Length: 364
Image 1 (cartoon, rainbow, N blue to C red):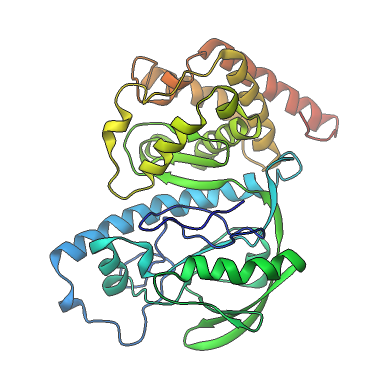
Image 2: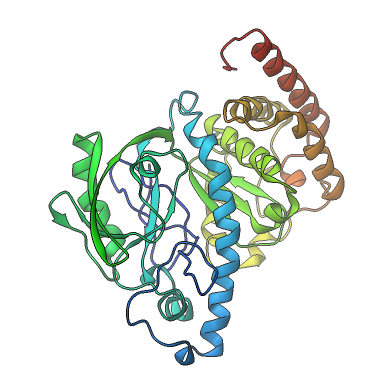
C-alpha cells in the first residue's frame, strides 16, 4: 500500500489504488531552464535574479537527486509491473504516478522548488511509471492535478493527504480514475486505468555507503550503490534482490524490520544523520540460506522483466571484492554468505535459461 508523504520528507513511492493513494517522490519535477525533467515553470515565476546563492545551491542538490531518482524509478518499473503475479502478498492496484508541490520540501529546499523549479501550491506529476495505466493514458511529468472525478483536488501544505482522501473512494470502486489536469495552461481530462503491480515504495537513500535496504514494504538503494552500478542491468540486480527480500518476508523473520525501517526513514531525508550508519547500523547479517533464496527469486524477477541475467554473477562478485564484509556499512557486511549466494545465482541463471529453452513459465 502506498503511504502519504510524511511532512518534510522526500519519499519515493508509487500512487496506489488503495486507502491513502498519493505520495511524493524524491525526484523533483524539473524545468527546462534548470535541466531537471518534469517541472514546468509557472507563469509569472520569480526572475532568476531573486534567487539567493543558498537557494541556488539547494536547487543543485535537488537536481542531482532527480537524476538518480529518475534512473532508479525507470529501472524499477518493469520489475514491479511484470512480477505482480509473484508478489502475491504485495501486489496492489496502482495508478502509477507520483506527485508533489513545493511543500514537499523543507526550508530552503521549499524555496528552491518554488523559485528555481517553478513548483507552487498545486500538486503536479513528478514521475510516471513506465508501462502503467497512467503512462498509457498519456499522463506526463509536469501535469498539474486539478480534480478527480467532480471533486477538486486540494492545494497547499496539506495537498498530499487531501488528494489521497479524494482518490481513495473513487479508485476503490472503479477500474479507472477520471482525472482533470492542466498542461501548458490548458485543461485536459484523462481516464487513468489502475495497474496491477508489486506495491513496494522505491526510495533513494541520500548516503554514500554502497548498500540497499528492504524493510518489508520499501526498497531503498543508496546513491553510493547507484554510483557503483555501471549500467541499468546492474542497478536492476540490486532492486530485484531487495524486492525479493521483501517478498520472502526476511526483515520480519530476521527481526530487522524496525531497525531497517529507521534507517530508511533517516536516509530519505535530504540531509540524513549518517551516524546511524556507523558499524552495521544495528542490522543483523542475513543468514546464508535466506540470502540464497533471495538471490534465486531475484533472478526470476529479472528474467520476467527482460533484464540480462547473465551479468548478475559477475556483478555480485565484483561488489563483494570492492566492498568486502569488513566494510561494515556496505552491502556485503549485511549479506556475507558469498559462496552460498554465488552458487544460488549460478543455479538460478541455469534454471531460467532451461525454462526459457523449454518454453516453460518463468515461475520459481
